[in-house]
Image 1 (spheres, rainbow, N blue to C red):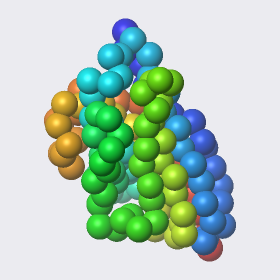
Image 2: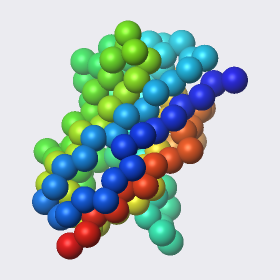
Image 3: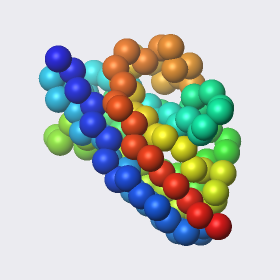
Image 4: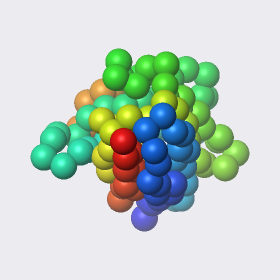
Length: 122
């Protein structure tokens, strides 16, 4: 069974940084685009970033562009999200996901992690 496990649960002050990781197993990792999404209480799941198969290109949501950096290590079957200049508006449950296309549409991703909480206090 494919598994995606996020880590990096954090409580951070506004302006701070946090790095999330998502380790995968039983997945031919290099064949998949890896996405990051987030969901705040009472809101819909929101696209954050998508990293192409080789890791040579990452597509970002406008709200995080310039602050967040997505990357992957295909030798470790792991994808990362480096988050800087965090604000309370970034507080959410963050998910990683695997799909075949670089897209913002969560329905195009086949496999999902369980999510990891990021809380940014002001």
